[in-house]
View (cartoon, rainbow, N blue to C red):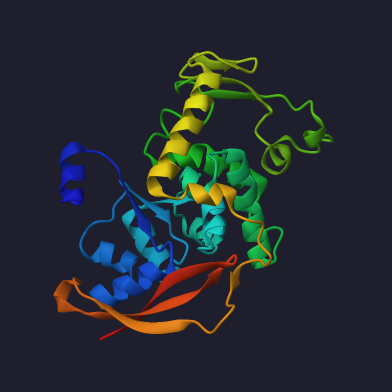
Length: 298
């Protein structure tokens, strides 16, 4: 249905692909292949598809996306925050896959700062590969600008400052302690900037922020409403108690006692497949915590 509607309306499709090992295990149990292979098999992939995350894509998956012209949305802060893993971005770039940089959602990376996303996109790959040259500041800046435009099919209109394109311009003030000294302007943006250096923003020739003042909306009022709405949401969800959680004595997953494990079968998979999982009860940050681990197909 999604593919058919996108074809009829000529719109883009975004879908999560290989973000977690759970997705791969579930796809294998349901379809006998991983999610990338399945999406290719049913004719879903194409140049109008943005595959989000792609953390656990293998070489053969990257080749499938290259053949289909599918683009990738890389969300490094989210992938680290949720402990999803490290996407094989250098391999994707070497294969010729277009990779744009993104921030995911506020619930999975805490903000939408592309300055943070740029820095972590570079540092994560350098640390994971133990190679300081695996990705450059220039390439990361391209991922945040022109490659992002390519990912959404708008590279002829936005993504770079060129004659004939829309006047989308961000002005930064380098005159602060965090960006001093400056050896290279691009490296300073990617590795040193925090985001508050932005003084003016022009979108399609119109200033929406000038000299540090947002003119389109009442910024203070928007922030107040955002806080009010967020508080109301956590209250409705019953998660507002986390705002008052005690300081943890330990870090990470703490198994204070041997976890109780019970088999859990759930139906509903295509082809009549049943699944057996493992329901594991332990303690996380001193609190009882339950997690579900997918077992072997039955």
